[in-house]
Length: 315
Image 1 (cartoon, rainbow, N blue to C red):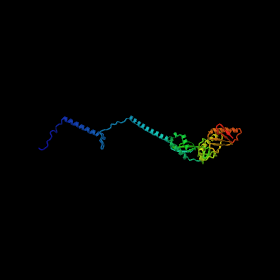
Image 2 (image 1 turned 30 degrees about the vertical axis):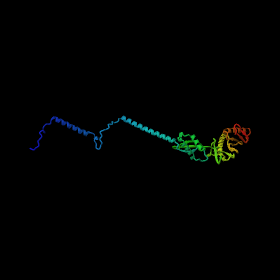
Image 3 (image 1 turned 180 degrees about the horizontal axis):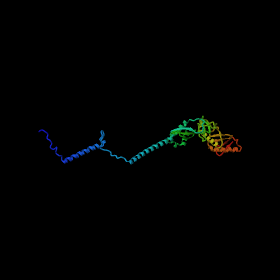
Image 4 (image 1 turned 180 degrees about the vertical axis):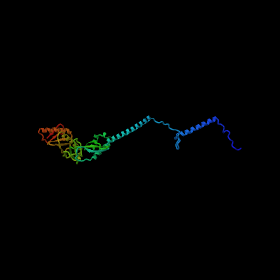
């Protein structure tokens, strides 16, 4: 009476339409489970951020890879070339640069030692005043010699001679060779063949020494007059040596500083010169006069006066 009523339809056959629908549902469920199993495991990993956008980067071909490598090599080659050029330019600059100065003497033997620090300082002053000439290729050696000679008159020439190290340069100094000397106002002065007067002599003392018999006191400016006279005497000595004469003594006569009497080796006749006339012209006149006296038996004359142009007197 209270028993559950059995389903009378349980044993009834399922309609064909329902069986087809159930078969299709079961087949769809099976495909879904298979695709879930066969899907890549990388799509759903734990602790991985999921993104709805994924790059679709195609793989480069071998030709594209070769082109990319060629561009990279070209860039690296350009960088290497720039670095190499910069290194070479820097090396050339350091090789040409005159940063440290060394001064040495020429091969001519000196009778005394010299302080090269004084001359190195003078060269450095010139380079500081002319920074563009700190490169060896742009150095004006003539201007450098003139600058150093103006401060240190005993210097005749100064030449760039070598490079002992990086940014270092050697300079060779040539000092003036004295041909005559004279004490003026308590100081010993010398003169070279060009008539340049200087105080420091690094060679042997000259054979020609001026004897001052003028009687002019130093307070009257004898130093200035003596400097001019020394220059004139240096040119006379040079002209005389060129004509075969060897001056041995020069005397300033009493009461004048514009005349000089020069004595020559193996000659009893001396010559009177004036500093107001050219040394070469006077020495030419003196040479003709001395040769004339020797050829006419007048070699015993006391002196020859060539102070007046075009006329030579003797006594």
